[in-house]
Length: 119
Image (cartoon, rainbow, N blue to C red; front, side, top):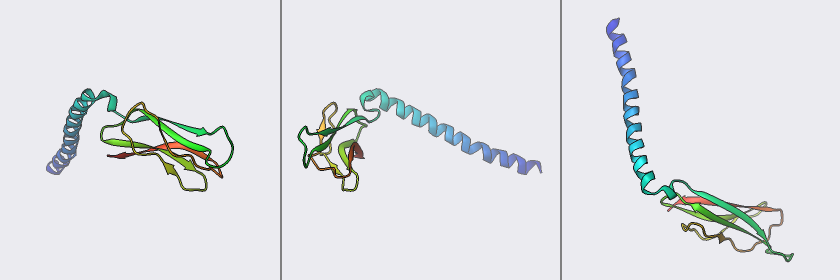
């Protein structure tokens, strides 16, 4: 009986040790990456929905500007239209610059957002 209990506790202990080692390695790597590029730790963007002063068609556009963009990622502004296809700006990786979609009509309403994707 003692042998099987001992075996079980050893088996139980080993995964924890492996996980702790993996966490230590990940932390070390993460620490290096963060100190090397603090500005690119995470993507942080603002979105705006603009409406032209004149009424009529093609009165709305969406814009996005990012103060930080995760390394190896790109972003694009997204005009999210209710009841219609969404429209997008070009992909960008430049920080602190506003990027806009074209001007479109939002028959049923729309809002601004953005998408991120690995480069």
